[in-house]
Image 1 (cartoon, rainbow, N blue to C red):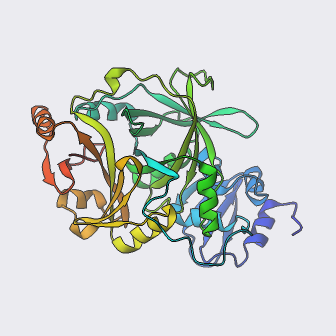
Image 2 (image 1 turned 90 degrees about the vertical axis):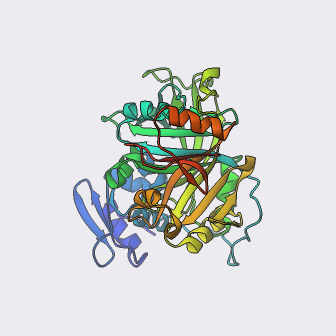
Image 3 (image 1 turned 30 degrees about the horizontal axis):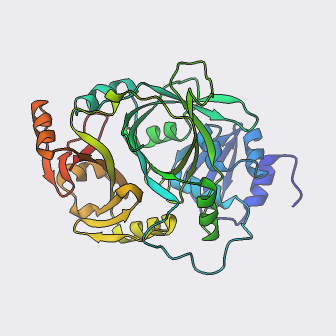
Length: 394
């Protein structure tokens, strides 16, 4: 198709009849509504960024994560519209998706659960009071295709475990730089469990599988985490390089399911940061509440190509290293977790940890005046910590 000189005109022409989703584009201040009815989301960007999207140089998800595209309103609707802009994959099958099996060997384990917070400095003492050691602050940098490294605007603290899993706290730390996805999540949802990351052995293979099944999958973005101050050095000994992509179920009620392949660097973590006073040895599961349990689990089975199994509390998707995604119907949640669910249709409600001795962990929490309760998922600290969430020990 012949491209117009004005990318806004090209956008309108290219998207005519493309999707039932109505969105509003604001391009350098110029408004262009796509679709009929009330817009579900507003996408703001520059003409240069719009040209990248239309020329398929970078997809909407990558631009959003870098902060070159901002979204107000329904993030899920905006993401679906961005995927609809992508060119059709001629290799996608016309047959049914590949059936889910007992495992997907390319998904190695539950890499991390991310708590998105307004106050990154303030969250640290709250989780230290729960008996977790937190590593030093890390700063996120985005690698642009031309090899320029740019602050993404976010930083983190992590609770690290010897098997590579971690609990991550992420905040918008540099206001002069866009925070990409996380800035928009904070605007829409405030502090919340905003990310589940699955460690994959090969991002390209996982993306190819999704596309074979006709599911949307963007090219991975490259992100560095750096812990040595504000003068960035991408050397392997000083930074950690990760390829990231979002699974099709991302952006549901404000949280992402991310695939990550760590391709460079390993931080030197002192022994003390593996020895948590509460006795936690490793992270074992993410607890996900859903108002439509069967439909939610079915979407995850398709996206991950792993079949779920039944639990007394709901459904379970078993990942590598004996880590899990545990799904529970919102109707079966105790009151304390119902409050965290709020009006969302699907939400990450907590993280589970294996401990050396459950009785010792409970004594530690009692000694710290941390209220606990018995739950089907272990000893739970389920009353939301200000700026935090639920954790379970078993």
